[in-house]
Image (tube, rainbow, N blue to C red; front, side, top):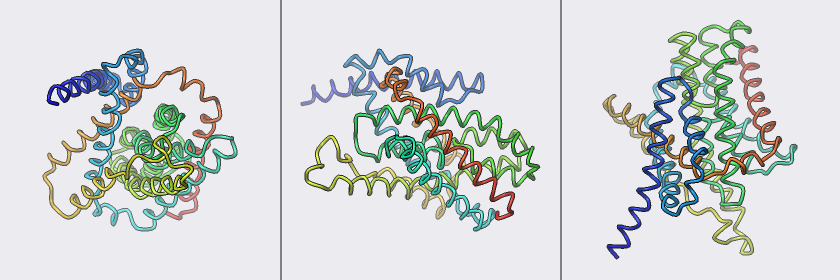
Length: 337
């Protein structure tokens, strides 16, 4: 028994070590050249896909892209503070929440129009509306297993990271063209750009005030992750309740307990005064774990499979991004927020 346990740990260690090395390399490239770390991790992982064919790495890669991912998502709860909600104002908070929900619904409807699977619409809509690659990974963890799940997840992560990087460059230009004030620009950037890192990059490139507001608005969208993923998990379980449908391959494997961890840390952060170094350290750990998970997912997935997904998902993702940007722009121009 003990020998088997040691062998298992050795198998996991090999795959995790590979993921860590690639993740550290991705972070170094990101730090040196300013490229998105998530995207670099994915590309490095995809380039090492041939290693996933070896049984030596398989279990570790699965562990890095599974439990590590869920733990990282749970740690994101320490990033949110209720004190900042009052500063922004409840109408603006309601507008952000409504925009997230509308984007998710639009993603499902738009996927039907394009002839894509509903789950792909949920993945891309959630990634665009909530927090990019992190949301895609969390939603994927709550969806039932399927033959296309891994491929759709990887495409969503790559696609939303690419769109987010483009938005980081062009959205401040759009806001300047529309003559947004500093606060309006912060709200626009925080409510539309997909990933947290790109929101920070775009916001602080305008001004410190814009960056602060954009970051907080973005974290409001991150807060929507818990109820949305829990709802998706519940609906997914209900959809396979038929005795003819329930089996090991089609039913969700578990209740997303990691979301309860997210909620617990969120409540802890807003009821107990935690040391700033602690919260900053946990936030960095969460980012590192998500990078590790995305990199491991890249190693596990064949680029040929991703390429075979076709043009429709690209149009799906572009449509969702434009829908969210148009909705937030309309609210600002009409002085609703």
